[in-house]
Image (cartoon, rainbow, N blue to C red; front, side):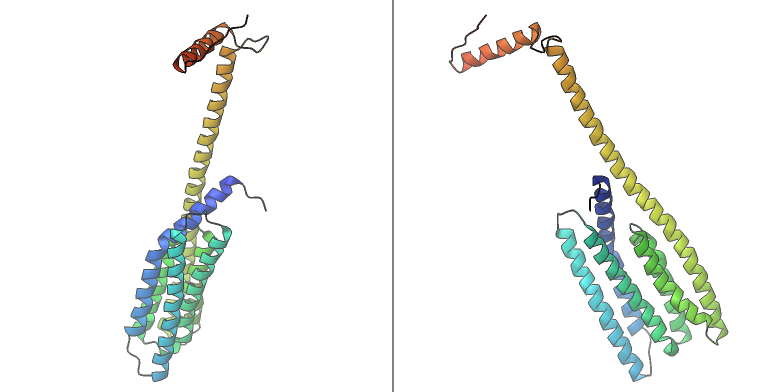
Length: 255
């Protein structure tokens, strides 16, 4: 499938922005996942074991993503759709792991832990506006998986305070998606304008060079015969004569 050079440049810029911002996102995810697993005490041995397994899975995924980011940034080749899809898939997997934490361990949460989870999910979802705005589908999927499923679960709870948190979570989720839409539009427009300006500049340079060649040809050739005119002939003759003197050669003029 043929892709225009402008689209290739925009794709390269978008993917490189995603990978450039990835380090901060990975670090925040690691700190947040470690904090919620080891920061709250749990009396159930099964729950503690399951949380450790969840944390181990999260760390493995974050580690694989870190390796991917490291090798991508070391590569000098232009980014492709394969790089974009790989990054998007890894981000979606991370969001699914976060989502599973809320849904699976919900019954064991204390009030403090549940509130902390909502805050962390909201912060991660809102933060994706800065880190993932270079690719709209990825930031939408990430924020949606973090905020909406667990908020819906809270609205179905028998506890009134959980219903309130669930409604707030859904509301914040939709506001976040709107903000992500605007952030993605801004980023994509900036990338498009940048590459469009570069393309226009290159086109102008090509036209100036072509026009310069045309002017040179018109000023140094006879319009009827297309041979060198008098001025151009004298210039070329003087140049040839100087070259022969410098190289100790002979010069002949046929008339």
